[in-house]
Image (cartoon, rainbow, N blue to C red; front, side, top):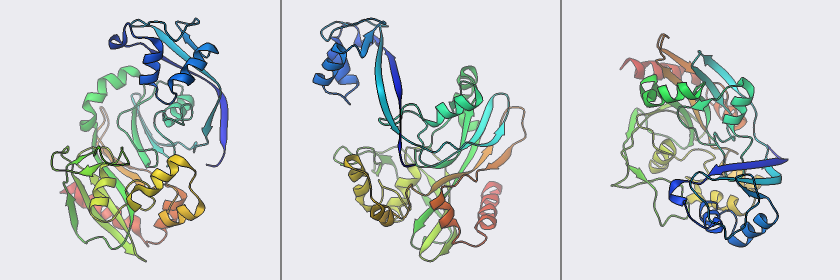
Length: 331
């Protein structure tokens, strides 16, 4: 994933109702804080920001429905994986495997090369994910193939996606048998890692079921079933249990490597300490009940190289994992 791609980028947005009558510069500084007020003033003067397709000035007032467009002539993005694993398709749905390291939607750095944009380019359709995967999480993603299908099926997502099962690679000896973690989760204002989820009494109810698939050489391979769908749920629950994911920059080493990466690139030494370049969590199996289709379980084999290397430690891991999955599905 080394290297950068450079291209012209035009980002557009609409002025919302609550922003009606605001000064343009105030709106930009609050809504898009990746530039300060002085930089936004320079960009407006240089003609890189247009209001309704025309020139504007920083002290101009905007109205509800006005269109803003911001041109970046030499936008640079880090290169990301481009693989798409086609697992199953119907006229309304796509089930695909996402590689580790590519975000679903735009981030501060990646705007063009998102996984959703890759899907829309490949299939030529207005594809919408029906659930989410973190940037570094690989595996199965269920998508609607049109805006209409998304509107119809988004409210029914949990009835379509009946079961979500992940493989997780952790250090240490995880307990035998079923481990049900039901710690409520929420962010903490005082945390330096603002996106991290913590177990707190008044957090959102969260439940994950874990079972150990195999253990070898000081590592454990787990099957994790999401019973609720909170942000970072599996990662936060594993950290609370004392077994953070291999390669997790947020939930291992007290978030040190996440904070370091905000300031500079991580070194090979850093990745050695983490154990993997991306965290080892893979959305491996999905139990789907799609309209007009028999209920089926599908699997993804689009593992990262580090995850494949980790799996090679465990002989017959897939037989054991499928056996546990079958037992859970029958329960």
